[in-house]
Length: 232
Image (cartoon, rainbow, N blue to C red; front, top):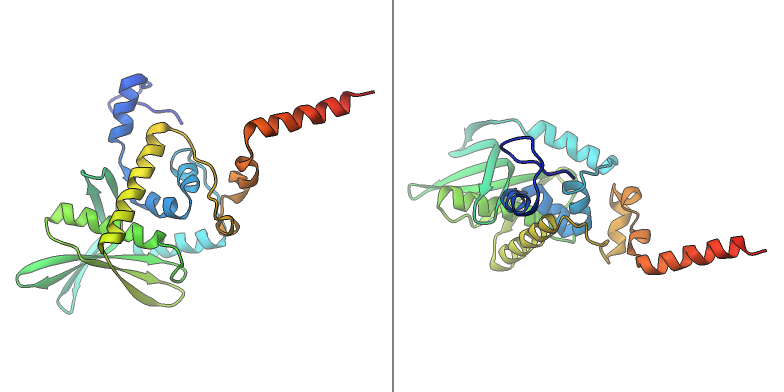
């Protein structure tokens, strides 16, 4: 990946490159990928690799119908779609599918809503992405954001997600891990949770089994194979 200055087209090197890397905001969507598999997040957001399967295509169609800027009020709740979000403290930026503003005691409390195509998952990737939106909203509006909601297309139900201390800590830890990957410009090894590879659209490009093999052992095996083939 070639890094260039945001003020011009000249390549960046050394300290200038490091400064640009430090300023580059982490995409909020990358946190979801990172919780599922840090290597997947690096392949998508660092190496710019992408492959689509049925699950990702359905998710893209769902967001195409929801990511339309605008707002309206329903039963006293103000709603705004496709809301730009950012956090200077965590150096994150992205767009919320929907933010509801609930009024109480003269104060509007933001409530992010993220749309997902499937159903609730065993891991916390969706919750971390949603919590990151909540952290951005807290910084932007200067008010506590205690919870958000995940709407799943398969079940057609909302799941309310409290932003408790544990989820906030996991979200900040994930952001820090991603920042380290982006700064190092190095794609980490595959996740040890092999069952996740089966549902990953990048499995063919990632080649987790080959990537997990130590390079030295692979090189030794290749040399032995070549020598065996060259023997009389």
